[in-house]
Length: 263
Image (cartoon, rainbow, N blue to C red):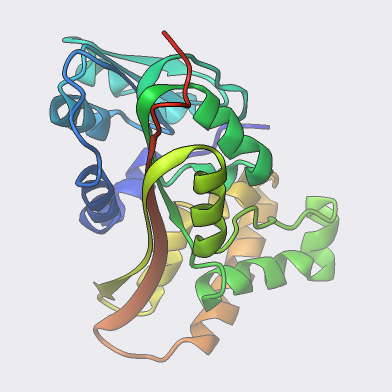
């Protein structure tokens, strides 16, 4: 599958997208001299912030998108480096922090994923994850409805983006079962004030719609996008500014003394 992530499109709402990162980072306790991994690091600009916050000796940014990693070199050095790879295949041992901001929603099978991530942590290791949970907003539901329309379904081969995530209480129970003796799990609503409802389209083009863009020819995607825009704007109130509520789950846990792996 082609890598069609567009860093410039994603960054159009940079301040709004970065706030959840900082809220998640506030849950992470420093690990001076430790080892940290940033899963789904994107361009790497926030990986540097993570590294400085934790005081780690080494922080590795990990992302599968070559386009996103293209500018990561300017944030490397001083203990920070970057690797290209699939989060679903990530493996490690004895890590002090596994951090992931707005990335694990792209990975299927969370009942298997989170145990694998927990197994990469050392004793007392921390897992910190932020994921969007706006799947029930028209910005997301309309995207899938349009994908099911006959002409787009044919172009997509019947593909419709799935939803791999559980509810917040499910993650709280899972962390406890995996040996995280301390945890913080919350659902937070970020209210974004956009210039108008048309900006919701621009927002989603930088995230969810990339999955459909990856699977369509240019002309097919433009047709899909036109139908998506028409259908979505018909469902949203024509208000200025436009209030766009966006739900996200933030979770943090620390492995107990009797769990975790040795370095």
